[in-house]
Image (cartoon, rainbow, N blue to C red):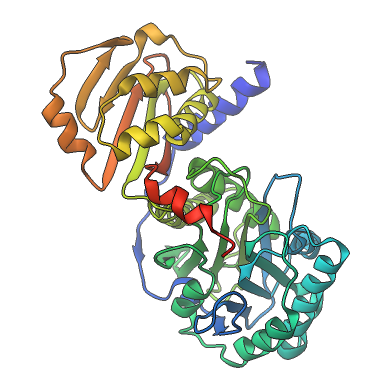
Length: 423
């Protein structure tokens, strides 16, 4: 590892050791919990009739904004358009559809994404460039614009400060439950709220972003500080989950900040920035865990913790690789305490560590020590593996760094769901 990597690791270690104690509470409302945000939904029958499949999120005041997007070379039209619209660091609305990804549709796909932004902008009376667009669903199918455009207008007509719950439902595809959260904290004597919603169940393996996630806050914050905080939060949360190893063409995480909390403006450093960043990270971790827990066909949440690594990079690489290993995931599904698959996955992860120093735990049961087998309690291990949340810990005994990754088990139903996804 070169000196720049070491410097980055040391800075991350210092940041984590100096985390400020944050006092916050979870509140209801999800993406519309923050002051000034409205959401509306509509049933457009994009893929299936009788379900909400379009959502519009709107800031009643001008807002700073930031986003991170898939690193897949194949980017869906709404991703390309939203990247373009976020260039100036502002946005006032997001329009989302489920049931069709609008990916690999060529020039027509980009025209359709612009038409979606235009329809929302016209109804809301804002510039088209201030509308972000997101789509999720089947890749390579033409957008049914005759259904979508009226649906967008209908969703705009239903905008409400209590519309967050329905919006979280409208963006789902194979998800089995909506994913939303909101927290409230004090910054400079003012109450600041951060809310969010996410969707994701399959095609989950992050690289700068994953699935779809939309965040809102009423904090006063610069565009630069907002972008930095979002990038940090995504690294700690969405970039540490995996379901099936597939990084989608449509991955997007965005945030809008309306400023109605009237706090002293948050800059790119200082106590208020750190508090805001940690609260945002808390929200993102909660949503990320929900995505991992809801992996297609999943029966258990898998949490992999790497302790005492020699660098942040090594801890992250090992944790993510173990949680993404098909063999580890299958063993967890089958309640098989096969720790050999765990150390094997860590070994090919690219992380630097000494295999002869690694201890491995299932829950609190140590199953390997210094890279070798122990006469562990098989009944206790089986009991741990039957839980809804299974924690696997690797202790590298090499340094002060740690990382946590979340995934899920690999069940028969994952294949069933994805064998006929288009139909």
